[in-house]
Length: 111
Image (spheres, rainbow, N blue to C red):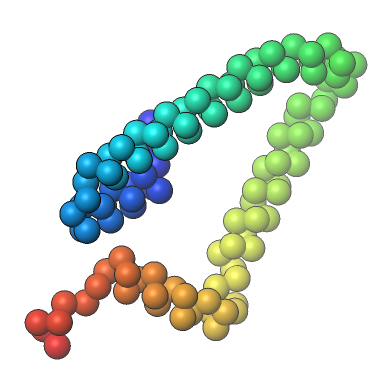
């Protein structure tokens, strides 16, 4: 299992501010909510799969076509997300600098 980036960011920010107990409580509630949503989605997928298989049994190529379509869609989305900042860098530079400065503040002692 990989850790959730949002939860790690919140926990690191809580350590920086010094409010660890409320952050752990919030993280626990967040994790329980996320886990319950994933559990319910898994149960719905299991129950829905049998119904879908009954209706789509005559289309045996459908799963292969859906997998190919989703692969191409994810690939195109990835190319778009990578190429956008390369070809149009002026769009979000101020916001990007703010996020970088927030995450990696420069020490005043060296300047």
